[in-house]
Image (cartoon, rainbow, N blue to C red; front, top):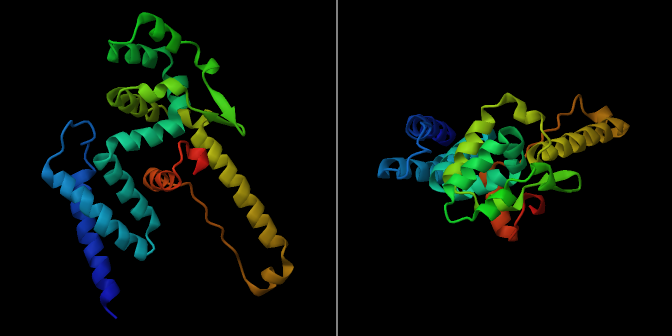
Length: 222
């Protein structure tokens, strides 16, 4: 009967250790020490499952996202680029193109100038949701990392048409339709006092796992 109390205590203690260890700004370090790596792995395999069992889904997502970003930095930024690439270009404009040219000395001037064309010509759409520019796949990790950081510091990025915002719009529409269907079911509503519909968009780690499972190359396929 006290097993769940032990789980809660273990989660609280572990989360305090985790928080002060991997919530710091270690993302820019080229090499992580063993303590940070061990804590991140423990967060993945111990504290995240406990949070899931206890129904603390927001905490579970936070632990997984931070640990994923530390342990699998390249995969993390690949997923984020799939969701925010077009936003990076719209918010940073030519400054990102310049960083890309500077970071790749082997690229010819011709190729560099071709890559710096107006971004509106490089973004295609599928079902009304923008798809990332193809050449961003070759962007060095450091450039993509800084670009994402710069983008999230801009409060206006949420208003730009992106894959992420497109998914949020679809999710909001489906949630609204489901609520309407439930409330129109008079037999159901006579038996319940109220209904609550929860919805969410997959976090980077769970999205990455599903893409691996389905052998997908794009978030829209997962």
